Amino acid sequence: EGDSIADAALAAKAYVENEGMKYINGFDDFNIIAGAGSVGLEILEDIKNVDAIVVPVGGGGLIAGIALAVKTINPAVKILGVEPERCPSMAAAMAAGYPVKVDMPGPTLADGLAVPTVGPRSFEVLRPRVDRLVQVSEKDISVALLRLVECEKLVQEGAGAAGMAACLAGKFPEMAGKNVVVLLCGGNIDTTTLGNVLERGLVNDGRLIRFSCVVPDRPGGIAGLAATIAFVGASIKQITHERAWLQEDSHSVQVDITCELTGPQMGQALYETLADKYPVDFTKPKSALTNLIPKALASKADKDSSGTTAGSPGYTRDNVTVNFGSEDSAKQKLPQKLPTPILYDYDTIVNNVMPSAKLVGAVEDAFA
Image (cartoon, rainbow, N blue to C red; front, side, top):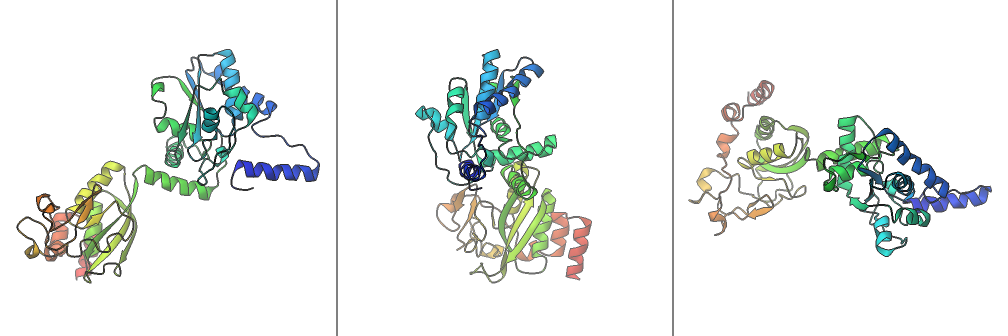
């Protein structure tokens, strides 16, 4: 009920009053805190020589119980807390010395940790016992969920994977080589949300990218582009082409592509390969090439002695915009583009791009 744990708590209290029941706070009740402490006892019983325990932090009940139990038995064990950047209520309480309410800029993947005000009982228990507190971003959480599914075949919700997110993001460099226990404490996530999160995790991991480029609007234009992408080893997941957005060149088409990669290294290789042949943009949003390089597909006769294309506005690479035809850009080494009539004929596709036999057959049929 509502947008946060606080909203749900208000709804639960109203329900209790109407039904004559007793309300038990899920993280700020002494019995709840004591029960959470049993997790710490089991860790110490099962694992010898523990150096640190990483605990997700929402209202504070879980980390308070674990810290109390573990520090009582072995004060040398470090208790490390992790909370989402979008709801750093424990960090705010630590800074103020007492629980304070924080404003959330929006929902978080770690919705189970979205507690705007930590529990006062929990806070008093954990304040002298927690050694360090860090925050993780939505990107960190999505990558952690992806890693757990891929590597451990384990489904977790965002809140449950917050501790793993902090470790994968390098939030605790001092723990390298140490015996660290990371709590995975929640799998309440529906399949639709999980699918969306995993896809975002692929984007954040550099394994799913979207870019735009411009190709000639003629038979074989998109086939040549697809063959170049296949040559690098990337897999096209989605492709659309738009004619209307290229206002200055009626003989070209803008292609927006989503590709699956093996990682950032393949992404860099893909960009460099495409940039040698096409006007391409990996950094700007969809349709950003509307007025970009309307003449970049011109023939070799239109190039000046500096190797630039006369009159073409420019292109963006590695967040640097190069303006073709300007005095500064004349000193830049621009991607070399093959002449349009040669680049897209059948022989060039076969001899230079080296597509698969299946693609060669498809192009051959198209040119027949």
